[in-house]
Each structure stands twice: as C-alpha cells, then as structure tokens.
Image 1 (cartoon, one colour):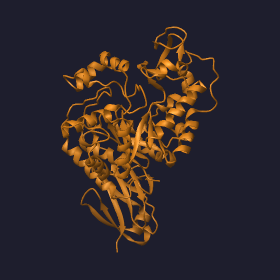
Image 2 (image 1 turned 180 degrees about the vertical axis):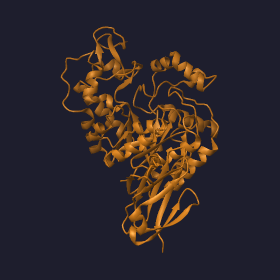
Image 3 (image 1 turned 60 degrees about the vertical axis):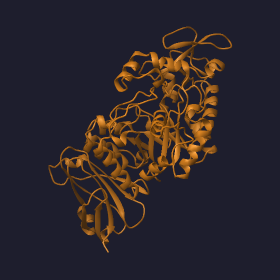
Image 4 (image 1 turned 135 degrees about the vertical axis):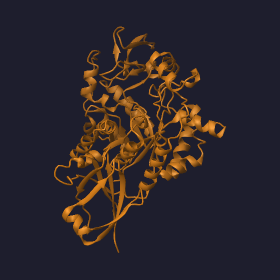
Length: 493
C-alpha cells in the first residue's frame, strides 16, 4: 500500500498571493500550470484545499469583533484591514465553492488539472456543526441541538415556527464556538441529512479531511450534550460507519482522513477511516521526547501506523520552524516522511515560515525564506521521490544497544522500505542533539548472499557492507546530532 504525501494549502491566502505575484485575478480555474508541476516534482500525491467553502456575514462579523482574534491579527499582520478578515473557514455557510475562489466550475477544473498531474484533491468536511449563516438554521432547526429557553452557549435563531434557541458548536473541553450551530447526532434526521451532504461533497473531490471527527461518536456526543437532552431515540450504530460505507460505495477509492484526539484514533480507524491524525507522535517530536516517540512507533500495530497521519505542523499548530532549530526540523521531517501512513506537510513549512496564522485571515504577511530549511526540504522531497520510501512495504525496525551501557539507540527512528527486489532503502534518523549509535537487524531476501553497496541519498556518504556480517551482527549505525540519512542498498556486482 502506498503512503500518500499530502500538502495543505490555505486556499484564500494562496490565491490572493498568486494574484499579487502575477498581477491579475487568479481563481481555482486559472491557477498557473507551473504550480501543478512543482507539486508533482516534489512528489505530492494529494492537495488539501483548506477553506474553499464560504463563511457567512454573521460569522465574519464575529471574527471581526472578537477581542482575542483582533489581538492575534495585530500580532501577525500589523495594519490589517477589515477586508483582510474572511471569517473562519470552519463556520461554513454553504457547501458551495465561493465565487471569489472560482466557484464550482473552478473547483472542477482545478481537480482535473490535479488528476492530469497524478494528484488527488482533498476538501474539508466539518461534520459537527454548520456556520450560523447556513440556511438549515432557519429552514431545518430540528437538525440542531436546541434549548427550550436561552442558556449560555445558545443563540436565537429565527425560523418559520418562530424563534428558537440553538446551541453553538463545541467540544467537551472548551467554550462554545460562537460562529457555528451544533448539529444533533442523536436525531435520525441529522444523520440522513449529513450523509446526503457528505455524498454531494464526495462527488467533487477525492477525499475529505473531517474536522474534529471524534465529536460524533455516540458516547462522546451523549456526554457533551447531556445538559440539552432530546426526546428522540438516537439512531442505532455510529454515523461514521454508515456514512463512510455509503460514500465508498458511490466513490470507490475515496479517502477519509480524520482529525481526532483523546486516544480515539483506533476507534475511528475501525469505523472506516483510512487515516487518522497522530497527535501523540507530533507532541513527542515537537517536545523532544525522542525515546517515547520511538517506543510509541514500535509498540503500535503496523496497520495502525500505516493508517496514521504524520505531521509536524498544520493550521491548528504552531509552526515547526518556530519550535525546532533547522537541523532538528530536518531530522523530524525525515522521521515523519519516512514512516508508513499519510505523510503531511503544510504550506509555508517548506520555506521555514514561523508565524501561525489565524484561519479567519484571508491575507497573510510575507515571511523571509529560511534558506537552510528550504534547502533541507528540497533535498528530502526530491531524494525520497526516487526512493522506495512511501511505496511498497515499510517496516519500522527496533534498534539494539551498540554496547553495554550505551542508551543512545533509543534516539533512533529506523524504517526499512522495499518495493522491488533485490535493493531496498533504509531511513535512519537520530533525533538527539548528540551523536548516537545502535545496531539494527535488517531483513531482505538474499541479504547474506551479497556484499551490499550502501549509499546515502542525501549526501555523498557511501559504504560497502558484507551481507553475512549484517545478518549475524546487525548493521552498525553511528549518526551525528540530528543525523538524517536515507541509505539505498544494492548488491555489489
């Protein structure tokens, strides 16, 4: 099974920058061919257009008025103007592409161009809530969590039957999001409506990134909304199991990716998600908990790792270049790019951007390119494109101590990839800030029968190793601080 390489783009900001660069209007229908060729050159398989759905005027007004957001805008975009604030792309007013971005025709053309360059399109699906401007709030209020009277975390919604109090969306641990209305998954009608909506989205893309997907689980939902009960009996089974099955029947090969936390990743994988966020690995890499990162990967079932989304940043997290020094960044990047599963990079990550942008902004500041970071990602991505990494079979290997009393082997992440015999590739990362050593056992057909050329795809380093020695003793590795190497093994003629 191939491991996808996903690239997240802030659609509104990106198109605005393209327009400024080319000094003409640019929509999804008129993205220059060079953009597609560049993504293809770097090996991306999927492009996630974050924020193609429109935000309504009431939700945008909240984004303009909220004091904490205004302070965030001031911090990253001094001198911002009201027209720079588009509102949250997760307060969706309609699942129709904004005309300013090119509309449905523009999206269709963009997707066609992606396909022509061997890539697929991922879009947002926000299942837990809709923007307060969505038409269903007025026309189908029964689909939402309601209160019989005004209580904290609700808003007055005018409907055909008169005003009612609808809950703002939330998760159990934070204050409500005041720009969205909470859908009620205890109601069969909500299940049916959202499944139909999901099917309509799936007809326009190749996969969806499902926002806060764990909030829909029956147990989670019941606890979150126990204070606003409904008299309706909840549908049997989980929404995701039925909805994913229906979409995959209609669109074979469609990809479901879940934003999920709280240890519920395996649960969502069991309900049909192809990939789920691996926030635990993210936290360990960013927090420099290197032994724990290794232990987590080795302890997890291989099928779980292969169904995980590995990342160092996204629009919800701080920029990795602001958290890790360039050499650390490079090592951690190879660690996630070298794993089985979905490898996920974020717009700006490849150039060392440091500012975390509030998603409500439709314009972002120009940041200087960090040349060392840029060169590292360029080298990593182009080298991996010619390797077997991400294709064929990837196996995470367990290092052994290089000698008694040397604990540094716990700093390695090592993955062996084999696509075609007899050669194979070995991803080796030393996450530590000091030199580390280990032995590792390799497995490949005919390993003991050859001498092996061992060439690093990221440098000029080359070795020859005796296959029988590798089998009997293991491969000895000695890497400098934050060492990152991709060794290609080929039999010596």
